[in-house]
Image (cartoon, rainbow, N blue to C red; front, side, top):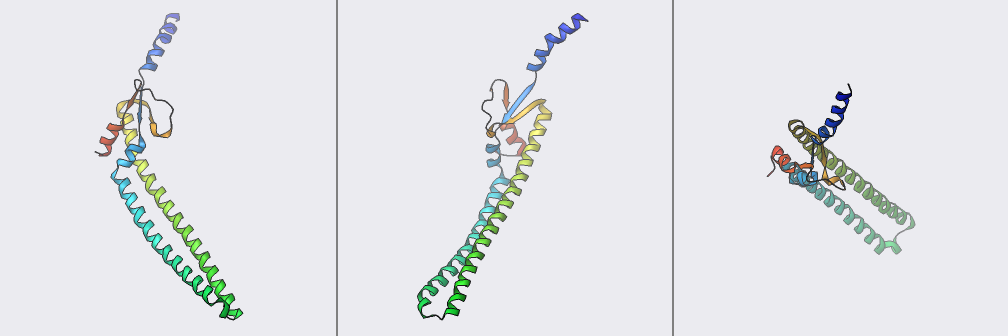
Length: 165
């Protein structure tokens, strides 16, 4: 029994060193993915459309302010008050629309990035299972040190798995 315990203690460190560790750079992978480029283009197009709409609202507000300023002294108090309210309401509507558009863009970006990250993680899991890795870490998340001799960089293999050149 004593010999068995000694043998187990001697073999335990060897088993630890036989474990495989890997790492990859998710930012490099994601930015090279066609899905990322497509998502960025879609977000840019939608953002441009929203910006045009907001610019039209801003131009309308500017025109109303200019007209109000030019006519302020000649307007009866009731009309003056109504135009001030219109300008304030237009400003509030602009602000609400800008916030809504920003939220929609943010939600769309999060949705697209979640899909992309899921695809990368699926490929990482496949590589991990096939290669017998114990851990595969993302080096772009701020890990302070990864040993190049004890950890295998799977970035190139991951790119191949995802069909990235």
